[in-house]
Length: 400
Image (tube, rainbow, N blue to C red; front, side):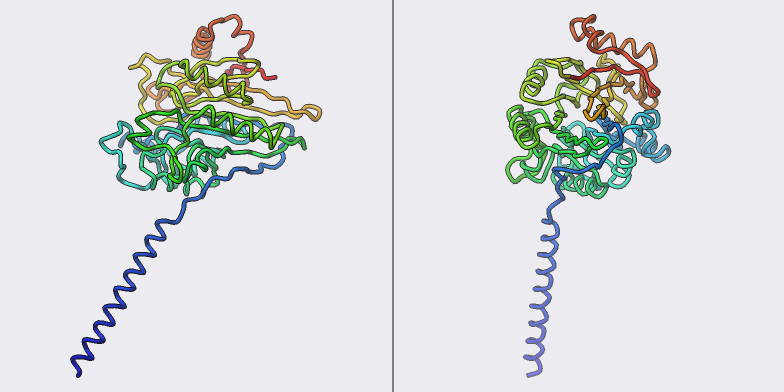
C-alpha cells in the first residue's frame, strides 16, 4: 500500500515537473517570437526658427569587425573620435541622416562566416548612443551589411535604434515595413514643412538567392531598390501631401567607382516621377553631381565615418567623399531651399582615422574631377559654384 502511494506521488510529481518544463519552454519560445519594434512612419519635429538644416552623411561604420587595432583605437579614443573634425558642421545642423553599414548586435557568430567577405557588427550601447548624441535622427539600413548577422541581428538593430530614439528606413520585419517611407513633419517660423525619405538597396542576385537579404512577404530584411516601387510611393505621398518635399536616398553603384548608366537612368526616372532630390550612398567614395531639369542628383556621398583601412590607393580611386546639407529658410512666409555639398577626405590611411573637410589644393582637385565628369566644365562651374564658410569649402547646388 505504501509502495503504491509512493509510486502514485512520484508519478504526479513527474507529471507536474514535465508540465512546468514544457510551460517554461513554451514561454521561452513565445519570448523569442516577440516581434521587434517598427520604425515610425511619421514624426513631428516641432517648429524651427528661421531655418532648418538637415545633414546627409554616407557610408558609416565604427569598424569593430576590422580587427583588434580598430577596437583598441575605439577603446582608447572613444566611439566619437572619428567625428572630431566633422563635429562643427554636424552639430550646426538640426538633425542628420546616415547610411549605417552594420548591424548593431551582440551575436558572436554570423550565418555568413566563410561565405561573405566582409561581415560587420557594432556595439549595441556605444554605437547608437554616439549617433544620437551627434543628432542622428534617421538611419538607412538598405545596404549590403544590414543582415550580416541574420534576422536575429537585424531585430537587435531595430531594438537598439528604437531604444536610442533613432528612426530607420530601408529594412523591416516584413516587406511592408522595409519599404515604408519616413515622413518628418515640422514648421519653419510657422510655415509648415513635410519631408519624405525613401530608399532601397540595389538588387543583387547573390544577396537575394544566396544571402537572402531582401524582405519578402512576411520575411524581414532590407528593402529592394525598385524604381517602380518608389515611383508608386511618390505618387501616394503627393496625393496625401501635395507640398511634400521628397528625398530619395538609395544605396547603389559599384565600390570605388564612378556612377554607371543604370544609376543615371534610375535617378532621372525618379526626378521625372516627382522626387525633389536624389542623394546616393554605397560606393565608399564620391560620384558625380548632375543637374537634371532644374533638380540635383548627388550620385554618391561615399564614406562618412567608416573606420576601415580602405582601398583607395590600391584601386587608384580618389580618396574623397561628400557631406550634403539641405536647408529650408523662411523668407517672408515662403520656404527657400538650398543644397550644399562639402567634399571630405575619406582615406583613413591619410587622415589617421580622422576624416575631415578638404584643404584648398585638395578641394581644387576634387572640384575639377567632378567638373570633368560632368562633361562640360564651364557649365558645371556656372551651375555648381564654389564657396567657403566657417566650416570649410563647399560646392553650392542652387535649387528652384
